Length: 434
Image (tube, rainbow, N blue to C red; front, top):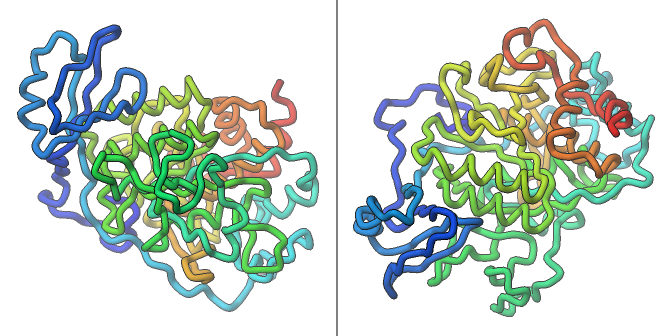
């Protein structure tokens, strides 16, 4: 099941049959070998290392030709996720529970609607307490990539926290910094490609999901507008890779990860997924590459199928990569959200994901629910910890988050740590890491 969807929890067998794109092929060369000539009607892109993307009107014949080529380690077709509706914003309650009253640190008028800012004993992640104790002085800027439906880059609460590609001149139709992308001022859009197969630069959110995720992570704090994000010193790269129908492809996801890493992202948020991993190699190899070469932590939603993903895997959450942190969802009362996937081995931590209030396009704000919301809550916590302790490796940062959870008997055997993330405890633990 596509786990950006909350409403339907049952799919027919036919809907679980993932398709492949007919025009794209992943090709990995053996070390030291030369790439074959695919002809003038093919476009070839080096994604990273020895991995290439070949684009042609029909790659099936190329795939057959390469089957026994001694220079080729493997080929893979580009798998899609199944189509499914994305969750839409819902109006938040006008009531603000006194127990969730925000600390005086924030002057953002709607911040009291974010119940997850409350202390651990109030089922929150101790954002208010962390800021009261640690403040935001002497923090380093952390670049975070949101791989999603795009971002409303004109939103009043997000425009000041956007990553900007200083090497690109906006709107001139030229690849000014020669990075392979034209006008990628705030990120890229892998869903729209030019005649050369290059992702374009218009990453505007035409849904709402990516904008909501981005606000939870890093909406501008203390600007007297809207809400506050969890992280105080972030720049967000908005990468549009998830269609409104949510059927993202492996190649688009891999390219998004590589783009984010090359442009300085130390944390990538992934609030998407699928039940099948037909490609098998591309995403795991991409994850390892960005860990080894760029030091990136990837934070992933566990999914919304109420499933034990130890037994029923979902991807990318079920890939075996050291730099993946998998997140389940919790409610205001502290219970595991009714929709949330779980897994004693496959899921690492829990975080608030039900009724999360955040930014939506057009200078609006609304609530959404899902592990899609728990993941950016965790990303915000991770970014704030990293901004205080920028020398943490992705593995160290992951371990800090896991070792500083507030345990809850209700999560026993539901995830590896049996606990909910806690920013205050995380900051205190990170201070001891050498």
